[in-house]
Length: 369
Image (tube, rainbow, N blue to C red; front, side, top):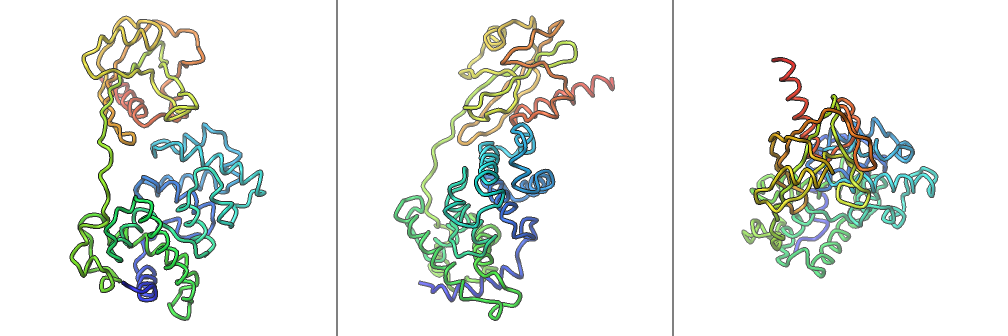
């Protein structure tokens, strides 16, 4: 069983020399770090970087975010998916503005009380921004710890998960004793150590084909010694994916297109989309589906495009049809007639943003003929 002291120094030294230069690592502002941690949930670093840069430019402080309207927040988040994250960021910013005077709290209990922040995110903010010895346990850290300590039990089991949290806490608290006298240029050991664990899992101790020869703590890794690195972590298989089928309708009238905003209490709440309806995947009578979805018949419908995308465990097949009517119908609570250019100001669900882009491409091709 490796001792904490044997792991800490090589990990600290390795991180200082090898850490990726990510924009949120150039600051200790808790707001900026919070935004990065929320964006990085379920999303790759390379995808997050431009979103984080745009977000910080548009909403540089928690008060700027708190004062923004929901549509602007969702528009800036458009394309990142899991939009509940953006809504929770907005809600939490308003709480910080009203209850904490616009100053992001440094106390763990106050941070974890904010919407959308769990134990991992609160620990990451406290350690990275404030150098507090709070543990972090995300997928990367779980992988590193189960391999270092040869933990064969499923980390999703409650007892094993508690053990991993305890290990992470023991390690980061042990890191407190390391100062800049021990490691050159190190002045924030808790922050550096937690980031080292996460960075090791992201770049070296990867799920498949881990680069064990590059690992700074390889000689202490029990899984490596037992030739069991590929077996750990021992994660149970997730629920099988489910395929769902939808048809969507692009209805044009006098240079406008029919769109609608999703309700505030459903998946992708408040995002915009083209009218659509779920089907059973069998051949459908499109005109009848259009009548039921739109409340009127467009007269004719042509196949426009087909899209596939994923939401959590669902695999979505979306068939899109185009229709045109001679004039726009009266506005309603459900539908809005919108010019194509104006759609750039609206936050669309990702699949429906692809429909917008396909429309632009078709119209450009038509003009160039």
